Every structure is written in structure tokens, then in C-alpha cells.
Image (cartoon, rainbow, N blue to C red; front, side, top):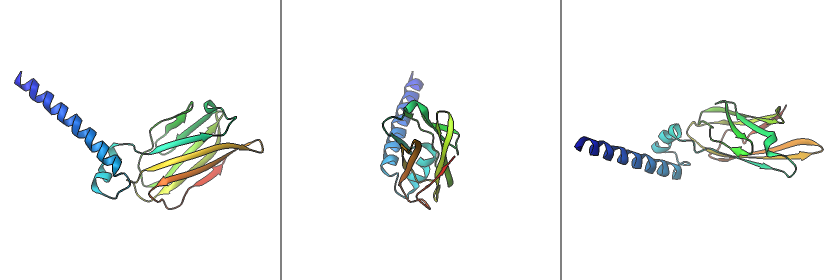
Length: 147
């Protein structure tokens, strides 16, 4: 019985400590510190927000993070899956199952997290996008390449 209580105590303390470290790390995600370097490998604090102009069906849009291969936007829902890596961070936008754009940026630090925003609209009967990155600076703000 004593061993069960000890293991239960270790499990509860470990879970609590892990959650507190996550909260602490999220508050420091913009800081250059040891906790950020560790937490960026464990947690995914990157966010990806898609804003659609009226008339575009969210089910027609799919976005893939090419570095990880993860689908980060599908059926109108943003998903986690953007790894913190140094170098090019690339995305593909599919509209009605056809590749419409490739866009991304260059990360100069593998522990910086970003908040990405993509606006998708229609101009002259053609899909148009605006890509913005918020967070620690990258080597340039981003690029967009049409299919």
C-alpha cells in the first residue's frame, strides 16, 4: 500500500510540475532564456490563424506545413503541428484540392515561436492572400509564391 501511495504522489507531483512548467514557458515564449530553449522542443506554442473573406467556403481550404508534413488547417479548423526549427518554414495552400500558393519565411532561431495570420480573399475572380508573422523577428517578413 505504501508503494502505491508513493507512486501516486510521484505521478501527481510530476503532472503538476509539468503543467506549471508549460504555463511558465508559455509566458516566456518571447524571451531568450534556457526555459524557452527547452520548452520549444516539448510544446507547440506556434499558432496559425486563417481569416476568410465572405464567399470562400472554409471546407475548400487546406494548409500544410511542409517542414513537418502536418495539415495545420483543414475543414475550417486550425491544428497544431508547426515545429520550431531553424531555417525555411514553408506552407502550401490548397484551394478545392489544388495547390494555389506556397508561402513561408526564414527562421533565424529554432526556439522562437510565431503567431501566423493568413488572410484569404478574392480579387478579380482569383484567390489572393496576405501572410503576416508575429513574434520574434525572422530574417524577412515572409514571401508568397503563386502556383
